[in-house]
Image 1 (cartoon, rainbow, N blue to C red):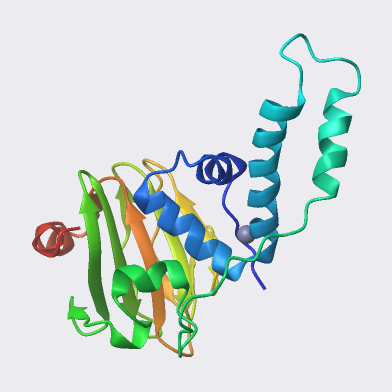
Image 2 (cartoon, rainbow, N blue to C red):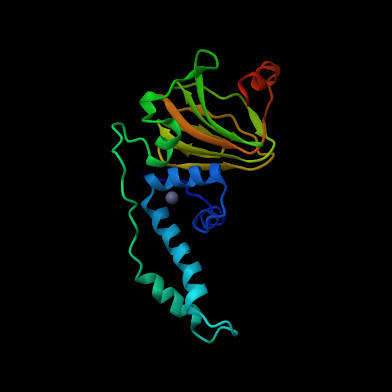
Length: 213
Ligand SMILES: [Zn+2]
């Protein structure tokens, strides 16, 4: 059960093709878990197309919006054709970056309880996988820029709530949190940051740049 979805703004940017590569990966990964957002995305996409194609350039007549909404009610949710099936349920958009399933990821240690695997960096934007054993915590930190996280396995809890597989968290510039992996299996997340993290502990402030955080 998914509890945390992308904002309308983020979904609209994705549906319009206006999201950058990293945010597209975040939304596409969430959507591979979330039938609700696949439908929302399709409707937003159709809304844009319908507005362009169906409506006169002159001021909208009475009922124009009703006409568009009626069109949307006829839209069937689109299921993207699946490529070679993942053996462990790794979302297809992510497999392209990993080069296979999550089980194939070569993790780099950041201490005894946390590991990471870089996916790509574009300017200030970084996409990476993070893994924590149950009970592991990220250390209290805030952000220069935003942080987008999609849970792939296990779950985590912080001051904003609890997140399980498919849930999407957005932390905005200046928001502070300490992420703790839930009990059970290892927590694996896809994380995109648009700027470096700001850790509160001195040790982490020194170590973070060494790991590219
Ligand atoms: Zn959703």
